[in-house]
Image (cartoon, rainbow, N blue to C red; front, top):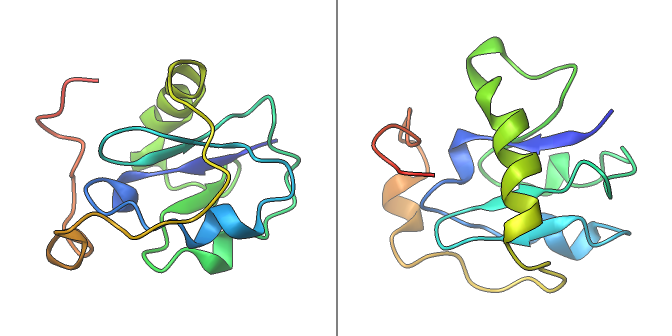
Length: 107
């Protein structure tokens, strides 16, 4: 089992989850974070830390977010590890409640 970063992280990139991860499984892209399923130890400490509820255990993830499982696995191999938190994206507050943010992005 692994955890998955989903739609709510896009264009926000809050990094509260990164600070609590014991294995540095988060990877950072330009618009959001992903979790490396090969590194995630399924500890779930990241879930309550996410201020936009973007992280799910893969078995608890709503069906609408199924594409994010593959997306996290693929992009984790391309993007660098993020081990320290930092400020969210400048427009994070504007985007945090938006839905279907993956639509229109070329990933």
